[in-house]
Length: 352
Length: 285
Image (cartoon, rainbow over all chains, first blue to last red; front, top):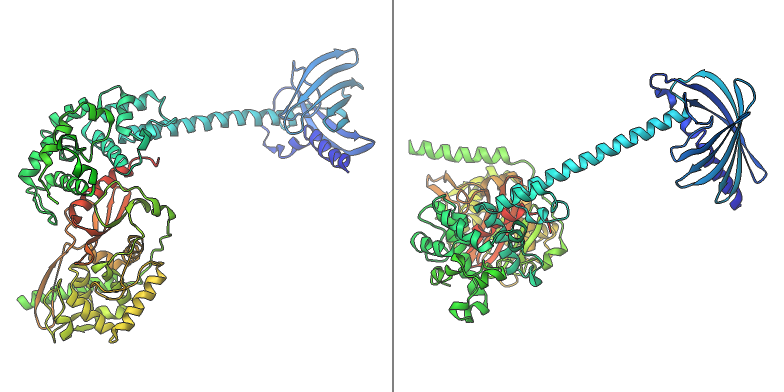
């Protein structure tokens, strides 16, 4: 049973080089130079015969090709001219790989016979093709169609790769522009110098620095960064080769003049505390600032007061060692900057 | 002149309501088991809270723990009331019981009446308990039947861990809701275009049949003050403490926030919503 099914499979696979590619040949391009040959092939295996099938191949000028059909997985080699024809070998790869030895015997100026002995995993098969020259190639021959398919596949593949690269670059550029550290630092973008450069430039702006610093603070508060795996601020500084503390201090220096109150709210605590005492309501339950632009500062300070109240450790810590809610990286703890100095300025504001 | 203006206000609101009184669509929101283990980057912000970004639960605390829902209940009351949209054009009589309700109230007087649309606006914009009691009595003379309808509707919305005892949200034994369930409720309520329009109003004006003029401000202070907030509902009782449901939209992102038992809801919500929109621009990691 196995041999029968193997026969069907292999014969079909073997004949694919002759027959399968002859389907849908009507899309022939301009007629190429060369001789058009009609081949009618039959297959024998283990005493069984497959009915003959006909296909057309084009022998191009100067080609060592042989008048047999072609599969895109097959190559011919060791082509040798003989007194009465030629011999060749064929190697096919893929799902039904095989090696073959072939011989073309001339039967006159316009006729020949090809014998192909194929050695497959299931045994040997013999394919015999009767070949007849039909005139000039039309472009619809199986081997030409196969070449075009291969060329198109390669072109398509290059287009797909180019499109994928374009999309990747766009995704990285977008992430760099918006300060999406996770994407920029991923394998997708980490080696994209343009994206990293853009990201690092943005990282040193108020908007993106604050966003990344607050993301890290949230990770710390929610315990997501236990073990230091998720520290976007620290990692961004490292990626960009800058010191997070110094960058923050520098940005704090220009924040008020540039109206960056959201940045001040969580990154410049000394300044935020001073503004908050002056501009924010001191009572919980209200929602008022002397000017709407101070709302982020008031919100941050109120939130900090709530977090301090919710954290028993903070309440029992010595004042000098208390950890500001938005503080995160280890290095910040070691090198107190303006950020940490602001802790005292918040004490008493938005009391519990 | 004054009467004319009052009439105009009332007519305008009724027209608005009738125009928007199309069939309500309840938005189904699938329970996400991940809500059980959400990060809580805002400890102490509320006794329980749930924040979703673009319908994905992102942050939360005690999201499935029962709490008193206070006036957030009124969203469910509104949904049940709007099962019969004829109510909007009907005159709702202010009963003595309605006129005698505890705050928050707008000062409706017994014997006066207002349209169902006006009463609904008072219920949703100003969380008026006198309007709530009047509406419930008008819709269902037998209060227990109305409560049964509320719980049936809650069950239909998939609010499996919630039970309602008072239509206006007063603290009551056996009444409880979770942040997860209240988000389901809020989404369903907001799917009703009339409710969505009303909760987004910074203020609303109308006159009762007796000619009393009312100008009601939205109890949700974030409306009109925090960018992107398109309203929802506030609540407060001594048992529930301060509660809030907020919907905010910026760019292509949507943030829902449910806060139960907060002492600092405005500042807390302000900060959480702003941070949520910041976080929305980070890829999921």
